Amino acid sequence: SRHRNGRIVSHQRRSLNNGDSRADTLMRRIGADVRVDPIGTARRPGAEPFRLGQKPSLAFAPREIASVDEMDGRVHIRLMGLGMLGPNGPLPIHITEIAREREESRRDPTLVDFLDLFHHRYLTLLYRAWSSAQAAAGLDRAGPHSERFSFYVASLTGQDTKEIAQRALPAHAQLAASAHLVREARNPDGLRMTLERYFGVPVAIDEYVFHWIDVAPEDYSHLGKPGAAATMGDGAMLGEQVPDRQHRFRIVIGPLDIDEYLRFTPRGADLRRLVDWVHSFISREFEWELELRIRAQSAPPAVMGGPQQLGWSGWLGRSPGGEPITGMRFEPERYVDTFVD
Image (cartoon, rainbow, N blue to C red; front, side):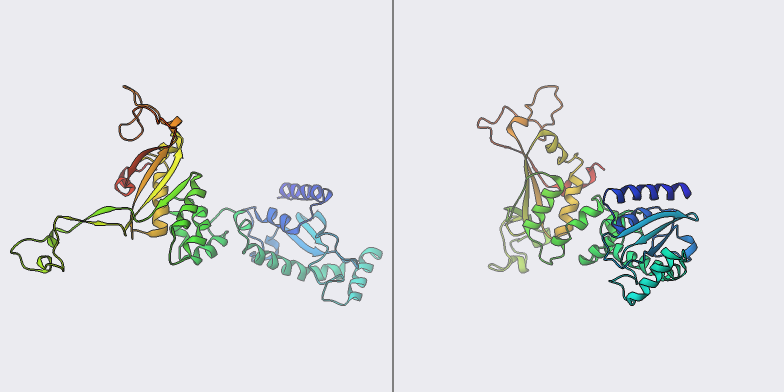
């Protein structure tokens, strides 16, 4: 503990010499130690490895931290402001004059020490309130109960942080998309921008893609068989499929180089994450397919005995105009059982 406090004091003194006197930075450094209680949550003052106070001064605070010292095994931090003393404090200015005169002229810090009892408690609670609303400060400590900002953001979209942590996607990547997920009506641009930012590749979305919908066998039309499927102009139809453009869209990724291309194939590492992103936006309401495009100069020609896979990553010849080549076009949902973790 003494060695740790010594490092904190020496580091902060160097920071003060370099002009860095932010109190929140110092408090974050102290609170990041998982061996002590989070700042503002200790049951007893003796469990806290630091003390906060205010230096009595009649001048307006030129910086936040006045001094940092180590005494009695604890880090003693004195601030220039944020307390009851000084020209910006709530106490009458003559109280500051008395405290300053007694400490500097008579070597009597009794009044200052008494006020610091309240300063310490007030400032630790102030820091606790500030850090609970900061996205970065909550990540200083490890543990599920140390970081609260993710809970606030997840609540905007009706998500549970425990469920988010169990998905293939990083938790903070999902929370970063909350601005798009908070809307009840999800739009294609939100999905496109999220995929582009996360994967770092060009993405386009084609809506109203033509496809055939299979008709259930009980809805087939049969001659001589009564029912809704036998009524002309109502449910009767020819064939076992119907055309549709309303319930399918296509995600087009590319042009890519060969390494990026292989990441999105059924055995690639990013396909599972892509499926999770789509589920986050549309659940299973629509059908969708994926089209991969590769740069002409990156498309490997298929050769006998080569590593290329037929239909996946092998091409006959090269594009004459250097235009991107359309590679695989498939439904990722059909390959869920083959995904690579």
